[in-house]
Image (cartoon, rainbow, N blue to C red; front, side, top):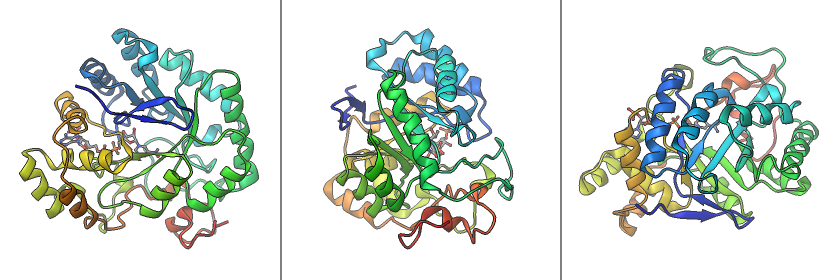
Length: 324
Ligand SMILES: NC(=O)c1ccc[n+]([C@@H]2O[C@H](COP(=O)([O-])OP(=O)(O)OC[C@H]3O[C@@H](n4cnc5c(N)ncnc54)[C@H](OP(=O)(O)O)[C@@H]3O)[C@@H](O)[C@H]2O)c1
């Protein structure tokens, strides 16, 4: 199978699909590492990791066992919120755990230094939480740039950003973000932010590409839509003889983002890999997928809210203004 590649602004290549590695608080590290092993054997080359997923050491063992030539791999990890002031230490720990000498990409996971413990309840709040403060974020970004200078990481990027925050970063960055990892699935297409990224040479990486059907309890509300239950998605899936999840992955890759589906089952990892390599959606089907948009954000981030914030919407700068 030939996985399509995308090009970052540096000229470096990134595979057009990655393997998500967040076990959503219920798939343990050993199981995730087992899927990584199988996925590397079947041809996955991009692994989407993060310190806060609590499984980098097990994934590091899987990477070492598979012995894929390092130059073929694209390994991405993320700085967790409580380490914004200790970027190098956090990156070096991730490198040790993953048993690598460099990362292909390192992201600031959230633009806030607001910590919540793994597996916490949706109503949990940290009294130390603060809104976005650009000067503070820039200090973290300078430390991220330093990692590139030191050769510890090849690219740096962001996640969970908004247009106003990205504009400030692009104005002040010495090394621009190469990617933006953002929530993207048929019911949450984020057209404006997606286009802003493309216009600024930032590759969108789409998380929760299948609508994260097994996401943690804290990330569920009654208003959420289920992508794989949408009639248009199901009808297209029937036409192609595949699971609706596969249609979500095809749509993502053809639209221009890099999807990073998670799975606990190797057979689903294979179906997702094949999704981006064969039997593309027709132009008519791609058009029909536009109508599935419901503005259904699943990862609302409410556990990162600060005192005085009105609702989780404040994290996302609705109306184009940074809330503080
Ligand atoms: N940057 C961020 O803040 C952020 C936030 C959230 C997620 N992420 C990243 O994005 C990745 C993906 O997001 P996610 O795990 O929340 O959700 P997702 O990839 O949208 O959904 C994963 C779910 O879909 C099912 N699935 C996968 N492939 C399937 C197939 N071919 N057929 C049927 N079902 C299938 C899996 O079930 P089975 O296990 O049964 O296959 C699993 O429950 C994460 O692992 C993480 O790396 C990043």
